[in-house]
Length: 417
Image 1 (tube, rainbow, N blue to C red):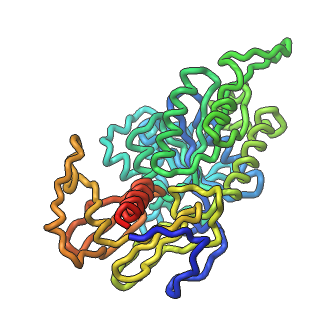
Image 2 (image 1 turned 120 degrees about the horizontal axis):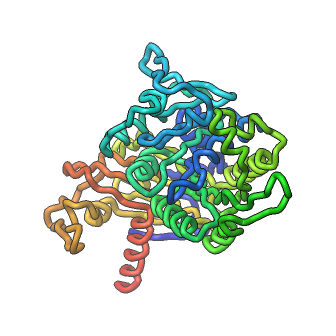
Image 3 (image 1 turned 30 degrees about the horizontal axis):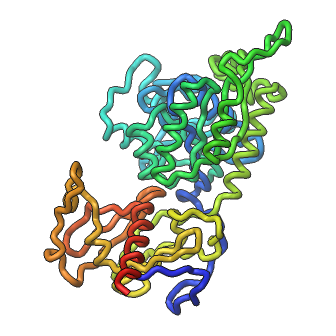
């Protein structure tokens, strides 16, 4: 395997020309999929999701919202959508979303009602999530907002691994315990290569409607300080407003019911900041399934997206340089050329490496010399999945792992010179 600096190499004759760093549709007809998450419950994440979606809609965008909290849906109540009334279906078996205040909405609450619990194991939760995104006739959307449940469990991992997320917005309160848990949730998304679009601090200050005195019930400025410490954008701080609760309980979100209120104006500012973050984001590879031998469905090679301060673990180009070489172009301009047999030998799935001890189970002598991929596909925003012509199909190479493999191989090459 060879490693090169893209800026110091002439483009290989077989490589595609540079492409502009334009953001492709994440799914057919959907420009951006944005998750709204939090480390813990009770921080107002669903309220933020609904009002942020409406603020984007009021700025002229086409917006849908998925209540991804399958076990504890709350979005229908906040939007005044009747529960327990299954949505209509198209003749092709696609769900038709409900519409309210200009938003298109899908939620488990529309299927189960208020009092009937959704008792589901993890795999079924994942099945419903995928259906709520890919099995719905959304039509053209600029933004699809996913209101996540709290925590870092199955739902978050399923979405990160199976959906081409544009990024995630983290909601927290200024309270110390909330900030600590929000930080954990943020780090989880970073690990699976989901861009952090920004932090929203909710319930910052309460202003008494009678005397006008302001009180920081949950302390002050913790979300902004955390964004500075971690190095992610701070989108804005929302006040603790009793009208927000009242409007949400009555199915009239404050952005719609009181568009001139302080809270509604802050939501408009947060929406504008979010759009700026999306516009500033460097293009990422569109989801793909790539047949290696025939080179059908190859991903893009976005050489125009190279930037000196780019991420070391974000690929912006993949190329079949020849039948034995996979080239990876990273956002920082570095390029790795992997021998495909080296990738097969470096597989770290449970069949190749003992999970607890890290002991190698794969004997290189059992891997044939001409082993090569039959198919390579994207796994969320964080990994590549390989199906090999020797029958092995459980291998996943994370982008972090690929970059580290390139560095180790380059170091070994220098030692052997």
